[in-house]
Image (cartoon, rainbow, N blue to C red; front, side):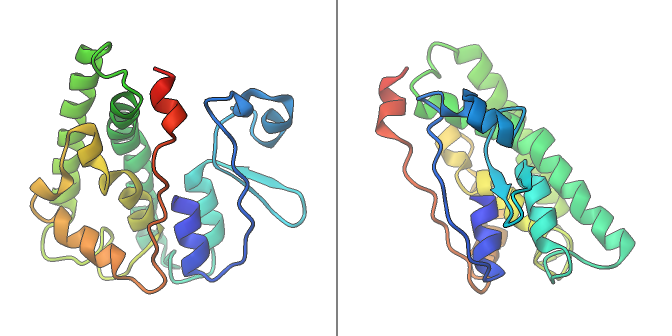
Length: 197
């Protein structure tokens, strides 16, 4: 979702290829050649070069655009929030959401509750980062940090942590969704995933 938002907002043409995690298509030799870690997303360039990991893809796509500041300190702020998203938001809320949506939350109740609690802590940190009436996480400018954070923050309620209960986050989500060319195309969770629990 993160890469697709950036691709659309930058008006870059792309072709989407779906890889079925539940059919173990990310574990095939073909996919492992794209990303040795076997995860998605992976951006394949016209040259055939592969760029795995959403943060790396966002930074690559944003290079030389308004989505990534030229100033060294401002860029460091973008990196700060990209790392925060991976270490705090994705590692807690995304995992808890996966457990809930695949019907595994009850089986792993203690783990899920711990992840949701960590997720609330991460959302509180994000809300503090959005203090002082700043419109976007790095200040006045919308960047790839906003895109990265939006992806799992906007659907945190599916994990049991409503982001809009954390002060400044609701208005920030609305501003992100109002940026030119923004489209939330998050597909519904695959029905066979629910049956796989």
